[in-house]
Image (cartoon, rainbow, N blue to C red; front, side):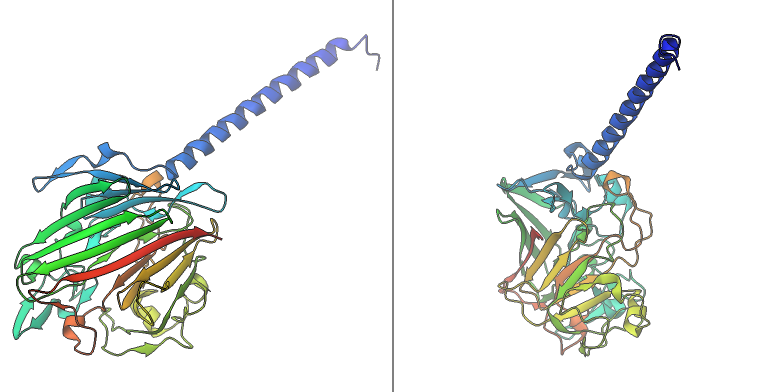
Length: 392
């Protein structure tokens, strides 16, 4: 082909190519912008205005904690909730590892799902919604089959706590439960301190006193996904729990009173194990819980050694759990039903988050062989749980 005769053709073709390249570049930039926006949505803390509300005559607020490493946490005094926690993944990017709604309206709508909340007076279940203490029977709200769960229908998760931010990295929350509240005896004064340390740990320190004999079992009900909120199922997370036994349950998830060995069962997490690797087995205990929803009897609980270690398969984020409690409830998100909207627009889809709730055993007030949860006047309830983060 003669170039001079066809230079008009070549010029036209060149113009078309340049226009196509420009369109491609524009599309790429648009996609990059969308990716950036999406990533930002999942790595930003909620904003204070989304928690500005008055409930039961008390003001709800959002508080931000920071450490020297750039890790940040958001806590609201509505239920004493851990709302967000930004920690670095293996690529250095910050990941929000706490699943839950983005604002107070979402938390109220999500009731009674307990996202990130402080739980009391009694974390976990009390069988038959009643117990006897010092010869007197106390009846509790029935809110989980025939049982009472997580303090009843209006437990600590639904209260607006008094809050005092101590400094950039710690906050103190206080609440006084009246004698007879949700059926429990005694005026109970509770203080919880969240501390975000420079070694990327969230420490939760609980103290309480009562003026009448009562039972008490406080915990935190954060839902974790170490790959980030909205990243999908947690079944490929690996989990290790230093427990030789569990407290097996009946069909309503109340412990039988026995301790069963985990060896040769799907509950043996003494070595790092992929959560989904055995969850579909036909084990009777797995059927009872719809998956994992059981109390593990810890071998040690002295705050010196991690009693559980969780690792995200995508981010490499590792969470070590330390506690002085004798048990931990591992819940694999079996009752998540895609009805709650999380931060960033994701739904609470089936098994997209999990809980590791440090605790005394469920139904201890009705099981004399279990460690006691009784608190008497003159005694001070004290317990600490630590969630420490790193990467591999």
